[in-house]
Image (tube, rainbow, N blue to C red):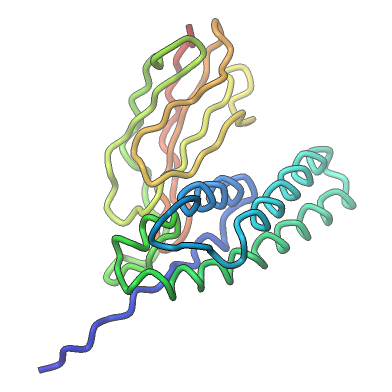
Length: 209
């Protein structure tokens, strides 16, 4: 009988994420590893990873003017961030005790065997409602087969392609905060699987109170 246990491996799908999704993914990893007793002191240090995230966020803001110099700088900051995320992912893989459950607590995704190759279709169109207090919207979808994480994003209805908040999370629910009361926003969501970011749902409009 073959009792060989398959090795749990960190998925590298995050390497293909667009800049804003990559920032959100990396911020989620830092948050989930902070104080995580399963991992002790990660390497590279989380403070160094955070510094790379902040540098990319600043470069992304400057690149909004679409100048070649700013875009080149943004692309370099992206590579700098990936330069610390790759060894961090390898460190997490080495310290997850070959457990999918422990790996999931790191914010990284595992390579899933048997998952169909190719981008995911849109998950269920999100339900959007007023959040628990003013300036908040609560969005939720249903868990999607093949999706390890979900990307929720929100834009003003008056500028539907300019996303004011983007978050990558393992949860199928998210509460957007800091929105402007009286404004109508559009929320959509996609699943992220072994082939990277899937298709987004149609946007759902809702006024914030």
